[in-house]
Length: 175
Image (tube, rainbow, N blue to C red):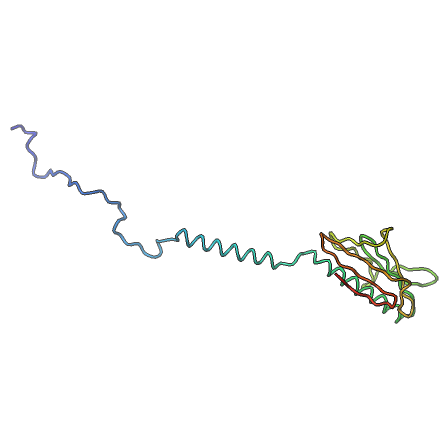
C-alpha cells in the first residue's frame, strides 16, 4: 500500500452536518430584539394624527375677520360714548386699509392718536368695502347720534363680516 493511502490516526474527515446559521437556536434578550415594522408604522401613524390635530387646533395668527369687526365696533361704540361724556362731537373715518378717530375742537377736526382712538390698520389680508370713494366718515354729536347711518363690510379670503351703525347710534356686528 502506498503511504498516502494510510491515514494518520489524528486526521479525521470533517463531519458533513447540514448548514445552520450561527444565530439559530439562540435566544435573544428583550433589549436585543428591536421593533417590528408594524410597531413602527403604528407609532408613525399616531404621530401623524397628533400633529394634524395640533395644526388644526392652532388659531390663525391673523385672527378671523369677525374679530376685526368686533374690535372696530367696540372702538366706534367707545367714540360714541366719548362724544356724550365730553359733550363734544367725535368723528370716525374708515378706508380700505384702516380706520381712525377725530374730535371736534377749536372749530376743526383734530385727529386722535391716544388709545383706544389711535389710527388702526386692518390686519394683513383684511380690507374694508366702504362706498364708491373707498373712504367713509361719520360723526357722533354730543347726544351720541350719528350724522348718517354707515355699513362697513370687512372681507378676507372669502370670509365676510359687517359693522353697521344705525341712526340711533346703535353699533351692530353681523356675518
